[in-house]
Length: 307
Image (cartoon, rainbow, N blue to C red; front, side, top):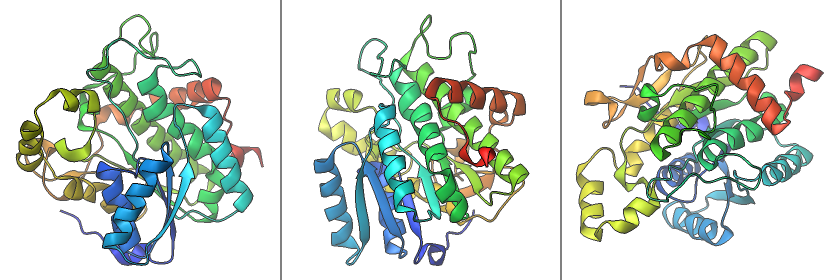
């Protein structure tokens, strides 16, 4: 098991995606309690205000700043990253936490940008966000926690059908998107080490967290008492599930990203431990190819390599 040092967060700026509920909210609360200034990009301002108020109730004096972000819209991502670059404030911590699995929501869905929704929410949006603020991350010598999933351990990248046009399943799409996010983290770490950006990347996953609010369409079909029972008895509660990302942020630099995962049997529950990433995330050829594909799809170039 590994420790979490909240003193690392004091006086620093952190950005957390998906911070308006569940695990992301717990990560944001812990960072605020540690003295960080927390940027919370949210899709719904109303939901974000409620989340911020709940944090302030538990952390008087919490420094929280709501921002607008819809990961399913590259225009929204570009707007946010442009505003952050204009402000020019270094970012010392970044948690790529937001995620969606469309279980119970029917057929394959496509975003206004033309991408499969899970692929864009979980991977492409985060890819564009990170590259858009890369100069700020370099300035802050940032530590980045890339929130993967235990489901990604059994995923593979289908290069001929990357967005599930020919063969779609919601959980298959989720697994692949989280594998893609992990590969992105590995390639980001490699590029940072090669170019001297000073950005540290670690991978993490929360195990099984029934209280996280993921797959709302499925949760809405279940009796409330079943949801409450599962939240109490299965996997990690959101507060403990958040600890793997906090451990990743607390970790020192490593040549390649490590994985921070629950320490219990099968990695589904318990406090965090350091372990090897899933083998599928350590394929450098896949990581480089995915970066190139994502750059082409989003139009996002690495701003630091062009200096």
